[in-house]
Image (cartoon, rainbow, N blue to C red; front, side, top):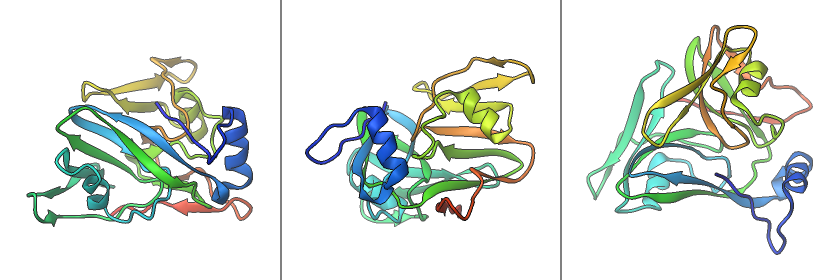
Length: 210
């Protein structure tokens, strides 16, 4: 689902993760998501200087005319264009997750530098959309994400535009699926919390919601 490219040299995944964790601001690359004809949930892991949802879609002019975010009231809000102007535009930043509507099957690339600060998310009591941060290469399964957060349900948006969930009964996880850095996920939290926890020794980038 995703690849990283470094200038002049392709590194093995282990080397890439080490570079991300040791000196993220020096790394430039991309993360690829395969958009379907319809709705696809993608993340914006890399820092390309994009600040508005309309800027994401303008790179796919004629293919994507609507970009949505999942609000803290658990409702999707959409920026859209009539071909001339954009309406209800909203702010985005590295680490944001959005739903894009495309008229064709096409790859979406988040291209730029790895942010110097890693993303954190203010989870509500209920459902929130997150991305597995670029410095969390240890989280390769939905169950590992859920366990790290302390929740019992983690979901992904399938190519049939349906949410599929991995869940726990407190002992085992069922319907587990692969996660990995850059993967957008919906997580259910029983209380408001921040994930991953911020610390003075680990710079983080707090993700805004409108």
